[in-house]
Image (cartoon, rainbow, N blue to C red):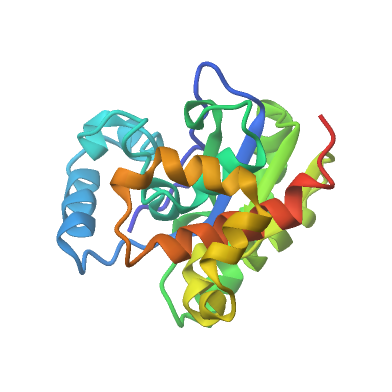
Length: 217
């Protein structure tokens, strides 16, 4: 839809952690997504490029909406708070590893955009200098590993894959084993329905298991 890539969101009080989802889906097939797409189309080029956390695009403050769905709906937020309790959600830099609209089941397009994304991050990472990159999903991790930038890199699963494995675990057991997750979930209790709590618990426990023990402050 828009030929230029968009810039990562870097807050003023950045903790030098860059969290990457995989790619933005701009199909406009839900009310929220359609509203976002229309806002994006109607703005000037500069606003389109700096869309993440941009109130002109989202009509929300950055702490409410960045424009990256698994962050905005809380999955990655709760995971990061569980892994790194000394940081607030407002301190993270955010983007998608593929900074263009990536259509599902378009193999040729995906191949081209992944190559372009590697080139993009090769240019951008030395400028912003993150000390840690958290990649959510295989595509994000593979792209960053193909760059020449050296820093601590961690891979966790994409939040979109939760439905396949979440029922393999008992949520109460995970809460007992991961007290970091329990304290964060209690803070967000009023914002998450009982029906969906098990997904947030599982994803945060997964992130703690993959990241926390190996991360050195």
